[in-house]
Every structure is written in structure tokens, then in C-alpha cells.
Image 1 (spheres, rainbow, N blue to C red):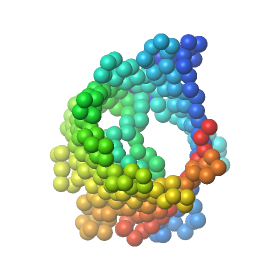
Image 2: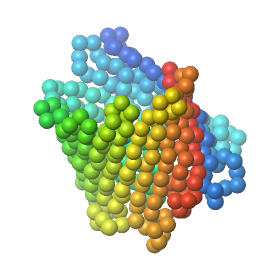
Image 3: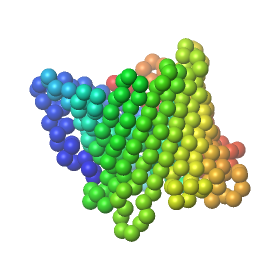
Image 4: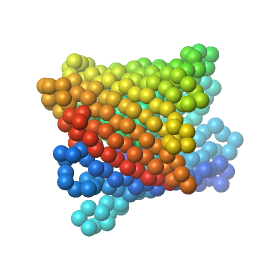
Length: 318
């Protein structure tokens, strides 16, 4: 559990305090994956079911808030039912005037409206960052966030250890703003300030923005550019482009995302450079239905933009 052990005790005590304002929520989801046409002859290549429970509270007469968030995911592989219990978020947050102090484990969602690709600031696999409805990265550490309301902007600095021994840590800096109602942006860097052994540190840079064209239709454009390793910058550039909109009574959200990476899959040709995904969402009778269709090396095993697969997820919140 790395950095979060001590924080878990603090937040847990706060959450069960008789003087605390506590809100408890949960969700359950099922996901089915069919990889690209060349990946398998099976109808379904992967599936899972999981449940999540969140408890978020604040101490009476205090600005201190905290969250405890666990995920339970059974593993049915080999006919053996194992229960995987994961601490997803365990943190406290303390606002002090314009400053917010956060410590523990939390979802770092620094991006714009994208839900599948992107999130390059904390590192990305060789084949990409694809993940359904995951616009965040789980991080452990300490973060200071300065809210500069007069210019509608924020500045964040975070110390993020990756191991309990603190021999592998990063320093994240991020500046973001909303200069006009339709435009949002972030510029940030993530610097590996302590490395295990004699390894060289990996430094990353990212800039992203989102622009709302028509607010009533939730029509907008978004994008992200990143260098995930400055020591070999030309081979570690990532581009994300996309747009989103609503479709009235038919669908609640339609989104298209494109991810470009030079020499993806170690392929010297351009065939594997492009990954793309169409995201469709509909809420009906308390359920949220998501269907993703596209070509993605990370999840669907795609080697080219024509190797198409699909992911279906249904979830309910309570």
C-alpha cells in the first residue's frame, strides 16, 4: 500500500467519527472485451465484474475532508474465486485560504474531456495509454494546490514517491487556467528527482487544452501533447486529439479520440502510429451503458488502424 498506510488510519478515524459529516456511495460494473479481428477467434477475449465503495466526510466545524475508496474485483481465472481488494483512494484534503493541502492516495485527473487516451504526465506504456472511462492516474504523495481566483487559474506542486523506501520519487508541477469560459488549459512537468540505483531520471512534459464550441450541445474539441522521456524526446512524443457532443434522446455522449505515437509497437512504418476510439454512452433506468469501438494496441491488441475491436461496460451507482 506504499505511502498510504499512515494516511488510512487518519482518514478512517475521521470517517467514523460521530461528529463527522459522512457520505457513503458505491457502484458496480461489468465489462466485456472483444479484441481486434486478428487477436482471437473467441467471441469474448476478456471480462470482469467489480464493485466499489466510497466514504467521503468532513469533521464537524472543520474544513478538513477525507475519502476512503476501495475496489473489490473477483478473479474467476482457473475456476478459483479470489477476491482482489484494492485501496483506490485514501486521502485527506485541507483548504487554508487560497491553498489546498492533499496527502495520501488519490485520482490525479489533470486533463480535459478525454476519457480513453491521454494522461501522459505520469508515464505511459510502450503501446499507449488506452483505458475505458479512465481519465485519471492513481498517485501517492503530498500535493499543494494554489487557487488563484482573480486570474481563474491554479498552480500545483506534488511530491510523489513510487515506493515506500522513497528511493523512486517524482516532483510534479502543473499550471492551469480558464481564461475565458470556453477555454481551459494545463501545462505541467513531472521530474524524477530520486531514482533507484544508478538509473537516470525520467523527465516528462505535457500541455493540454479544451475548447467548448456550443455549450448547449456540449460540443467541444480537446487535445494533449507530451514528451514522456526527454533523454529520447523524438521517440517519446505523444499526441491526442478529439471531439465530443451529445445526441439528444439517442445518446448522452458521443466522443471520438485519436492517439498518435511515432514508431508505436517498434514498427518503422507508419501503420501502427495511429490509434483511435469512438466512445458511446447512454444512461437508462439507473444504468450507464458504455460502448467503445476502435483500434488500440494497449487493450485491443491492434497492430494497425484497421484492426478494430470493442469494449462494452454497464454500471450502476447507489
